[in-house]
Length: 364
Image (cartoon, rainbow, N blue to C red; front, side, top):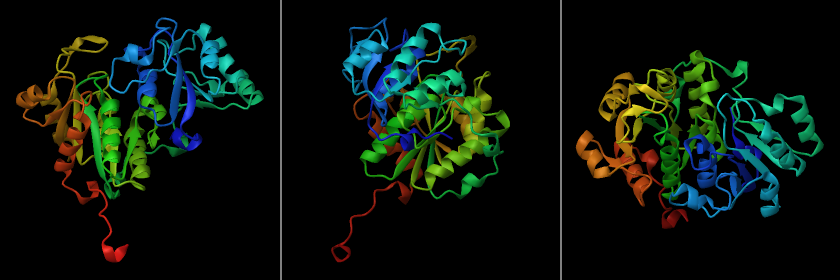
């Protein structure tokens, strides 16, 4: 299990490596860390293809900061000399560390920066990287590293015993905003005074600052539900409301197994369904069509005890409501996350989702 909150004194001045991918789908981890992280305070982004611009220029999203984009780590360290961490926010195709990145990462380590890596290869397991980090008093965090074998178990339904409401974000496809929706719901809940926490199931969520997380695609299939149960229980020990990030979709022929494992491991009280209404074909799978909200919602309610509380849409919420007969909101619009949270709270109908009462005069 991974929790970078416990390893750092936030906010951490950070350089984000996003070479060639910032603002694109391939750079979604970098994009998320720059926009949302509660741990890493991005002071510079490294991407030679967008250098000279700012993160706000490239991301075009509400809340995106005016962080400068530069063409190298050395330039980033000149821009942000107080940087304490380097976040590797891109996992290149093929899973290997690109040769041109080696010097960049070495520059950061020699400057004393901790390295937080989303790569498929584990830098911390390499003797040369480990020795370099030790020589410069730096640490390496490989967030994709799976739980230790002794921590793996099959699901046993113990999540039913947690004393918290559990809300899972699922979707109609990959890359439809599940992690963003989960984080925005969590942030809105905290802003409303609720005792909320959240669970990540991907590397971006871990780097953004989930209270517990694991890169679920590195967990053997038989143990997915058990790992998610443990994650939910660990966050529920200190929270009344737990938001869980889902992956893929139940109707996705390539990835439905992990989706079902998360659904059964979290065993949520409510589900929010993320959807891009303009998407017809599945991302990276041209031969597969997107089945859509109605089919996905029916399967969720058939395969669990959860109610589908709302749709987190990329489009117009009124159109989504009319089309699917479900409450809908767009978290990318002002007030969208708050509206989505209100719908979730209505669906839960639980006192656990209410702020603590003000003490009476006699209790003060």
